[in-house]
Image (cartoon, rainbow, N blue to C red; front, side):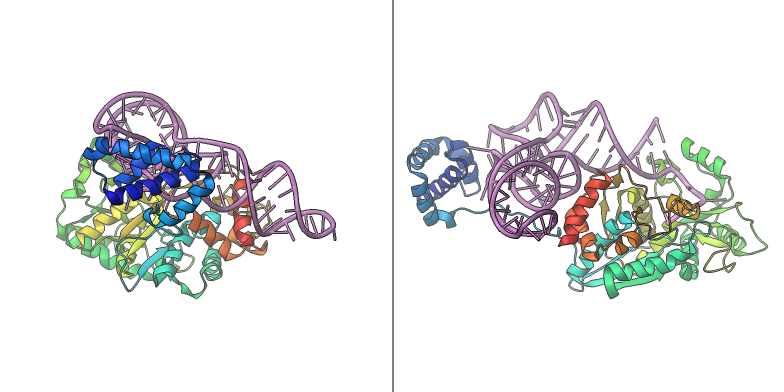
Length: 401
RNA sequence: GCCCCUAUAGUUCAGAGGCCAAGAAUGCUGCCCUUUCAAGGCAGUGACCCGAGUUCGAAUCUCGGUAGGGGCGCCA
């Protein structure tokens, strides 16, 4: 109890100094963390009020003097600074990635999500990949490859390692076959409309019960020029709770399809293209990702990818999700910006009016400004609504250093 | 229709049951500095979405509202 008296006095002094006058409530509160038992509160209350009276009768100067003597009795509340720690970090560091699509170069939205992963790799050591997702031959902007590479180097330096998905198609094929052999994927011949119908009615499509052998044959027919035609079939994942999964987004999602559009980088080399969930899961497994941070809009995709991991007996990495940044008065869609540039509304990707990295770079913004912005936002999952002026006020202040 | 997420100053973040009569950055206002502007220094300003519940005690836990966002593609 003697020790508690000392603590009580210390907290009373602290309380008095920060608010002009000490009060009983806060002092008792803090004492619970110092060993005061709940059952003893009534017994001890009188003592505390005496101490408080004593403290309040002192002048501020005297209080300060007394507090200096007792300061070490008071424990400080911990305040978290800088980046929040990630769980499950090994000595060898972390392996993380940013996965932009090849539909266009970076804008400030990309920078926001990419920087946070990079900061963690810098903090813990490890590997950082920038993986260009170009498995949809219909939506690729040729110049994006070089621009993404250059902007990655500008933003992250040499640490960033560029990987291009369309260079790895055979790998995805290998995994597709693996999934079929594990009876976790099937080649579905139903039309999109028919399948959507099955989804809403929670019913299996007839292809779901095909044997592994039949599926392997169909898969070969998918890859074969003389086999299935574009739009006729799709490779589907057999979800764990099947077509009755309570979340319609989880019901037998597609893994690959035929698309005969000529690919800017690969030409007509491939006819079957993996869809995002297959390609992403395969790459994350192969590249040994330990932590993944992505936009909240990929929450359901992450769940789908986890199912693929589970089928293959792999441990799913730690996942973090970032709230969306919604700019009130700024167009971020690269597709729309691209169109506007082509129509001559802007002089190019580095037009001063555009929120692209190319533009901000030439305007004198430094990589550290974007990194600081990302650090400040951290792993927050809340959605942000911000207007252009507010955003740039913040960015400008970070750019000043 | 079904699933999921979020809610703290103007803005962005801190906060994991009591040391929170809520902290930081930025903004805004004022002062100092500077020939001026910028930068810098100092001070002021300003917030827990609403309602119940649990608890001696709730920004924090639970439930219910409300609001915002996302997903349910042969896009990523």
